[in-house]
Image (cartoon, rainbow, N blue to C red):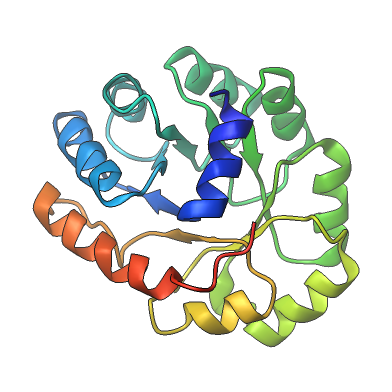
Length: 212
């Protein structure tokens, strides 16, 4: 499957992006395999982690069915480096049209960070695969519902920031397609087993709420 197909499949099965900030290369394969074993197939390693490209390369090779890539992607050079490492997913905290266009040119899935309707429409016009709604702590389900109402019906929106199993249902009801999960899933130093245990808690919260 190509990147877009992997992303579409994940949204229909388990639309959760694992944000592994602080992951070290030696942990990449065991943590990636632990996530994949529970059904998680969307995995990002933020570029402000130690040697992130090494982790992405190792995880992409060990978990070919997963859509592995990078978060905190801020420049066109970053996009190219991630793609060269085998990454297929580009996630940013902001919307940079040059980053989106380069990701699209390279056939990568791109989720830029947006907060307003203006940013959202500009990102979609640039070719974004979906929208990272960030930071979700500032965007309540009511705000997301209002934003979703004016976006094209097929727009994929994934809130990121402060998402827990307890608040996911309200965001799903407001139109969320999925979520990015960070420290509630992984913190530096956690074992692969601990990550898998955390992952299963989110799976239950997705049941019956998934919208492609």
